[in-house]
Image (cartoon, rainbow, N blue to C red):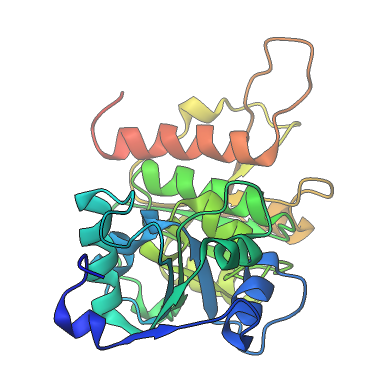
Length: 285
């Protein structure tokens, strides 16, 4: 194991393919049952290593392919360094076979590393309020892949935080984590009851933007300055009716120039968030 520093070598434990740790990691990644600790999440691949370290997130355990990362194995110097760094932060480090990696992943082309970490806790009082802010409210979203994609778009657009309300998806769901490319744990992301959320947004002077097929105002025409929260509703049922009753709500429409009537919630949220984010950053008029 020449790729590891001495402190990491002293942590490494060898695991067999039938070990309870392997089964637990497999169950987490497959999301086949409700986890005992919903704050834990799993990342397949080294892509998350440096992000977790940069955010100082608690890393519970690391599983790595002993053949791939052995002396003379196929790991690059960069991969070896990244694995060593994340293992230094981990509570447990497990050396497993390529076959065991395949069992954890349960898909063709399984990765060579799996990282279990704890989702950082965020509460509304922890949000650093600024003059210009961009947030997305995920109301009743039920597809973890969609939620992750929206978080990724918000992060890319320079957004500040996201909130789930009427939650139907676990914040630590593996598909959510994967499709967000780490945005789910890199930016503030929390769950809040709808009425409490509305009160909090009002108390902190957020404008609320709703995409609405019956609106007349083009989404490009709303002001970008100030604190803005974009509401993204359920793909099938839309947003909760209460949003439309709020005086702070600004219904907007995304013009459809072809034969379709609307975009899916992920694309619609991305367009609106990017438009506001770019203008808040002075990158677009």
